[in-house]
Amino acid sequence: MSTAGGLFVLASGVQGGHAPTHDTLWVMGLIGVLAIAAAPIFIYLRRRARRPKPVGDQWQALAVMGELCPHGWQAQITLYGWGAPVPADAPPSRVPLVELEWKQFDEESGRVAVARRVWAATIEEALQAMVEDRWTDVTLEQIEDAAGEEDLGWEG
Image (tube, rainbow, N blue to C red):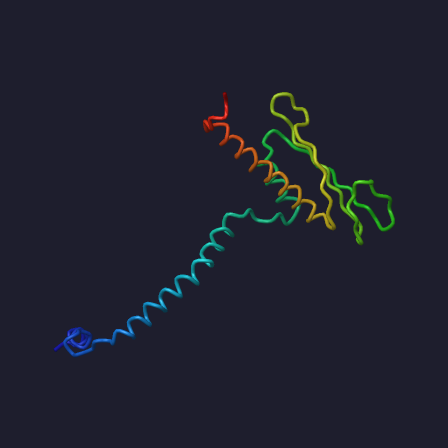
């Protein structure tokens, strides 16, 4: 008899290899527990893959903002040193602040469509805050477009 044929014979139920019912329940329970434990991991990994990658430097910020503002944008960074007077609307901070003012331009007129200011402790954090601010705008625009396309029946 060949080795493969011998394995099939040893693995068959003819040899009297029935597992007791309680062992089967234990195995099924263990499979259920592992499936339940794997679900949050799967959800976390799926959401993590959808998140935009953080901006690490000015070149990434240029690339991302270029995609998010196809009709043009402009940013100005102001660094405040220790003891320098800051605008009244600056957040309280124990470290010198970075102010980033950015503008998005309109397609038709070339005028400023959006003007915002973000504050951070570092230039990298300010660039990331600017990109996140624009991502929020894009998400809200998508929601408005989707709501506008649906007939919600609110009109009289």
